[in-house]
Each structure stands twice: as structure tokens, then as C-alpha cells.
Amino acid sequence: MHLLDRGVRVDLCLLEESQVHAEGLAAATAAGAQVVPAPGGQRWCLDAIFGIGARPGLTGKAAEWESWLARESPYTFAVDVSSGVDVDGATVP
Image 1 (tube, rainbow, N blue to C red):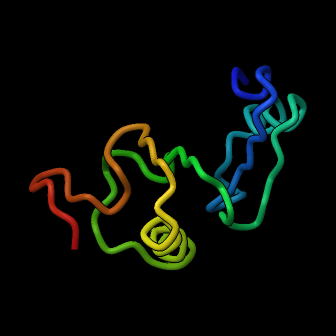
Image 2: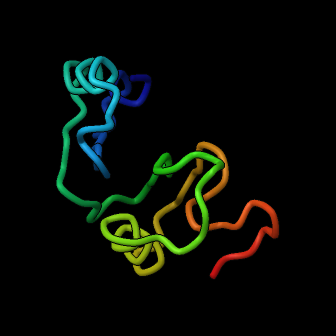
């Protein structure tokens, strides 16, 4: 919400809509965030796709978005460990 308060556009890409925290999404959109079908054109990215229990080898939308990250190289911040990183070995496939 702090970014929206500063006039920054916030785009939300939902990996799996059925698993989104409904109240959180409602609060974000009420504050002015917009849901977009996929990333594109953003200069900044907050990676909050998976928790620390994820394993390398992303598929589907997550793999497409990982390719976008590699291709577009936005400034990326991860909530915990960046998606696709093996947390036991600190390696990427």
C-alpha cells in the first residue's frame, strides 16, 4: 500500500487465483493496485510466487514468468528465496 500511497502503479500477477488471500487482494485493488494477466513492461518485480518449500523446476505460468524475468531483467526483490533456487544447495537448474 505504501507504493500506491506514493503514486506508484502496482500490477498484480496472480499465479493461481483460487489460492489468493481474498481479503488481501480486495484491499490491494481497493487501494488502486490492478490485476494483470502476466508480467510485461514492469521495471521492478517483487517475487512472492512460492515459499521456501518450493523446489527447482518451475512449470506452467511460473516458468513463463521466470523466462520473462531472465529476458527483461527487472529489478527483482524476493520475499524469501528467489523462485527456482534450490535452498539446500543455493543453485539454479
